[in-house]
Length: 496
Picture 1 (cartoon, helix red, strand yellow):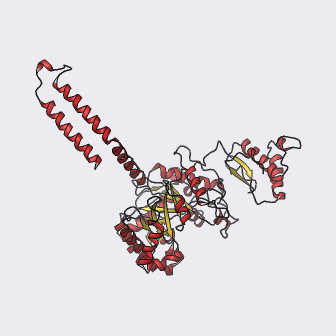
Picture 2 (picture 1 turned 90 degrees about the vertical axis):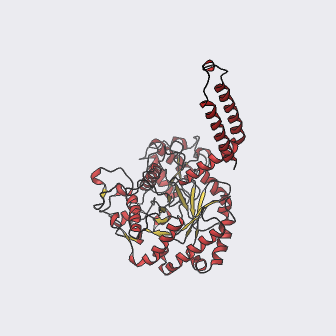
Picture 3 (picture 1 turned 135 degrees about the vertical axis):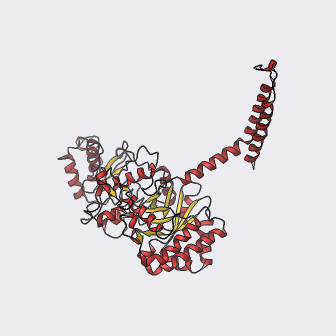
């Protein structure tokens, strides 16, 4: 209302100015400082200044709201937060860490009340989730769905910026017996949002595994598994009707591992390619420089085959493991760093996909922390960007794209010994660093300034960091057979 008044005043003053300006000015007054037109100009400017001053704060608020709305429409990179972590920080510390890292979007696998409370008053947007074991109750009872929305959404919104609800996780492929429950659960939750007048602000969808799509390359030939179409089509129609995204968990890592020799590693890692190494769709002649774009376009073509063309793809999970067992040789820190760093740059470049260059899919990296409590294989516990104690598992190289993920601190990083290793293992790594590695270990000799505390771990941390700094903090120089880790805390200020 306030801003409409301002526009009204500006309109009236403009008409007044025009009326005076169109009057014939006697020759005598032309170019005179006391001419009627100059008096008019001064009057208009003064009145306009008064109006603008009176309405400045509401106008500022309007522009601020408009800017925030525009920012919401921009593609983003978020993170998934799993909780199978032995030393997961308390919710308040977790949120403080998210803010420190400039992370603006997160996805959690439940509706953890402590996290939702801690997010209150921040600008961090969160997608909350309905676990698979709650689908039956919600899908079979509107009252249960309404209660879930009241308890997990209405109780926190808008102080906590809940942006979406992911209903179940990869249900069609992991628990196919629950497939008939997805649409009823999604619709019941949506109807409860409608009843609370929150359906425009909060979107409801369900994440799918990439395997629901068959023949994903070339993308133009991709299609949804025919045995699942009876569930997928009505869900897509719901997404189209409500303006909700198709949630997809897309992992180029697994595509590469399952197609070694066919899919080059560089394609999976977003590395720059020469034209002859780009993947070309023979039907569309579209060139694909990376696997993720091909997977996204395969989803778009699959939807198009079902006459759905207005649903966008949201990548709810993607990432690369930093460590694996003997059967997972490509799960390395270097590859994880390369994939996630290039992924972030790719999204913030806003170049879209070859099929839809005008639409860049937002992504959630899997995941924030290494979930060390997860069962084998080894890679399952090593998808995180950080350890549970908030130190980086490796350094992303994302400088130049803003402040997102402040762990790109290559000028303020150190290498220290990790917890949980016996003295014999640490001593072997220490001996290598001070011997063949040629680290400067003079300061940890008896009587020197860093000799105390005289523990293997303390001395190893000193030697590891000496080697790491000597090698220019390059990738792979803080490993020592897996007993070292990178930290942003100066180890010289602490005793180990």
